[in-house]
Image (cartoon, rainbow, N blue to C red; front, side, top):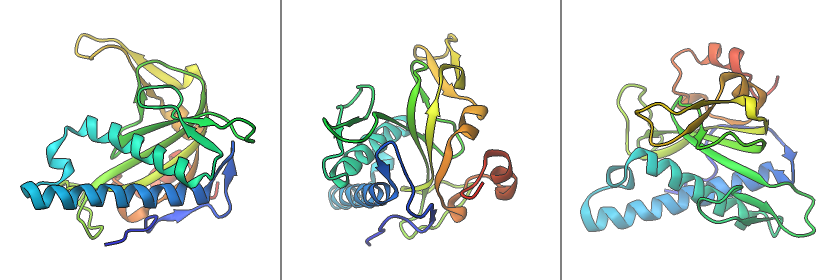
Length: 210
């Protein structure tokens, strides 16, 4: 099944820091194609999908890398890949009218996080696990990745909450609620939103037309 760029709402003709809504749409479509190809191969080999094979934290990391590669391929030379585990994920190509961009991915209503608070341009992507046809249940997770929200904007050091507790695997810097509100929503799929009170979420964090 070709999933395209999802069934949600995009900001028409949006562009910022060299990134365009067309790049995001194409990048997401490529991401879905890539993930579906992996699932098809795994199912033929082991009757398992990717979401059953890797831990969810690793799945989020993989999704960010795949999305970054898809955006680069769709950017027609505007962006280059920095490479895994390198800041920032999207590097402006020499001579391009663009800025470096970091991509952060989180599952469901979790806020994106990194190891250290770093100021810069951020693209956040949040997803849920639903059915292969786009079915989504807030109580029972499925096995297919579906992106429900993308946001973009500038984050500063004070937009992160830093934690270094004993249970953490090193330092973590989670984007604060204020930081999330600072980012402009570029894509939103109401049917996949994991918040039970969708309107309340949009009022608190801002929707596509604020």
